[in-house]
Length: 261
Image (cartoon, rainbow, N blue to C red):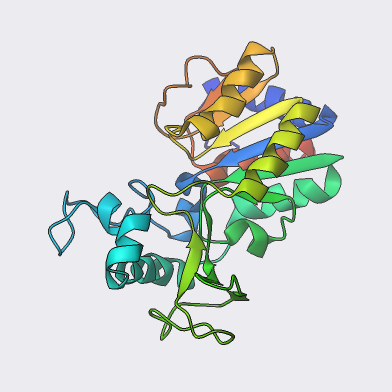
């Protein structure tokens, strides 16, 4: 706490007090929460790619699209494998672990994550809406058989053990629909309401990521944005902490538990 800007301490204390009283908390997370685990923040779904075009001379959004998976599956498999390789040796950081801890300690906590790295579940969170899927889950494109894997190493374009059809990572590619079951779970929880909403490490460019924060702001529900940079929501949220996720959440927990120094 002593190394944080003094100007942020009142907000951190307020957030900690609100968290301690909260009955239902929503954590919306993006790539920034995994930065302290050594993962790069992503441009779109793929990230890792600073150039406009891939080696094939196409935008990464086209390479990682549902249409490309149908036409030339080796291309999206190539880049999904690269993404998974970057996730493979990463573990949950303090931010993931604290959210999982708060799920155990508070009456109700839900995580809505854009990330496909699986780190929230690895940290122990159970009530997680993985709106873009998890790169470690494979699904048969024909019979629907599912398999959880530790890595995609040696699994490029594998065949289903049940029907021998092509398998794919169970992630949402560009141009594909969001998973209906996950959307329904989110909508049920939103309809029941939250009394505190966090947006952590996301630029909030997708409407379905920004909308829960926008609705909370309109309803007068306290909102917290944790992001080193500014986003389209920054000027509207109740609290904006220009910090990394692990630093910010650790500071909030230190106040909540009376360990502030």
